[in-house]
Length: 381
Image 1 (cartoon, rainbow, N blue to C red):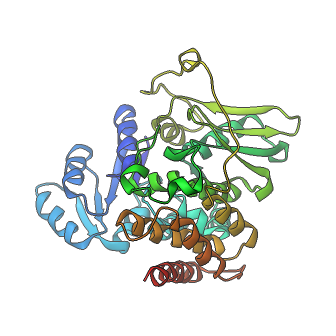
Image 2: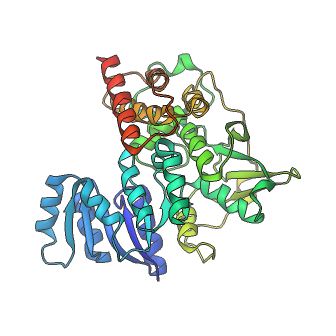
């Protein structure tokens, strides 16, 4: 029996995780969210967790009143989030919170020797070797939930020897603006950028897909998950989102993971690994699709990919700065404060201003994040 602490239960990944747990009878011992009290109340009453966290203090007080007839303990803030991440009754922590807020709970869960099912890409983008070194020290497994990284992880099961891997192919949908040029994106509205062709995701991740910043961040994450060099991570635009990513081996064999675009497959795999169980997801029919297409990314139009690639090369705190700047610039775009094309510019400038410090600490990462956000806000002001 799995005992799961689910961080970010009201978001897209969280809801689909609960769907998988509902089907397989996994035990949910902790739930966390930011402020969506209505959804959280429903989840608490169905899954009966021991501990619940709302990071918004006002939401926590409201939830406490609403579920006073249950046995669930309600906590709040970052301290509450960490309490759920290290909860003694959990063996697996699935971290699906969005943004830098996910870093500290992951580090604490590793120290508590939990299995980490990671859907929060910012943990590895910003934390880098802090996270991977700590996982090695405590003997903790980090299993990827993102569809692309799960596909790579699954494809790597074909060879027990990591040195057999030549490179990885990271696929990208291309977002809603595939084929457009930079000049055509000047006056894009948030409502246009939120129309993803294949996936149903939260607003921030959907904008990241539209700018292709998400693919840049995922390339950084792949570096740390799979110990790959920047030049050995190839990004390929694949509009159908059927080939979720692939591994090229030294003999030039290419092993890929394919399925219809549904996050319940990678979520289920990370919870059942190394076993495979029946899934609620529709079986893939290649003949229904007829053909699958692949393209090189347009690096001139989607400059956010270059920001992340440069951040990897520069190392130090540059990836943390790129991530922090992006979180702030996406927020400003969604609020109508900047243009769509400003996102890449602001991210790049903030990234370049970061420190080259290699042996950084958690405080250094948090400071780099803060400075990058401040840079974006001041630049816009």
